[in-house]
Structures are given as C-alpha cells and as structure tokens.
Image (cartoon, rainbow, N blue to C red):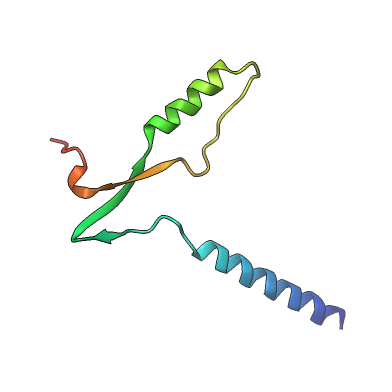
Length: 80
C-alpha cells in the first residue's frame, strides 16, 4: 500500500509538472497577415539595471526570463 501511494503521488506530480512546462505565454501570433516576433526589451532591462545600481544595497540581477516585447516582423530593423 505504501508503494502504491508513493507511485500515485509520483505520477500526479510528474503529470502536473509536464502540464505546466508545456504551456507557454510566448507564442507566435498572426494578425491580418503580418507575423509577430518577440525580442528582448532593452529599455526595461536598462531601467532595472539603473535601479539596481542606484540602490543602497549590493544587488545582483539574474535574468531567468528576460523581459521581451512583441513587434511586427516588418518593424524589425534591417541588418546589412
């Protein structure tokens, strides 16, 4: 019975973990024929870094999921 209870707990935990990891809030989107892409939001990153530098404490920022913004592919800057 103890093994069954442990196995059941393990199966439920694994299925919940798999369902959470498979959902993503950053997906590709299409609207009226124009594709969207996600790029790093350097304004927000620099604002956080400035706030970190001006704080009284000794802080370090570690970006696990850096901030991104959604823009149209047609608005991407062209790189030569």
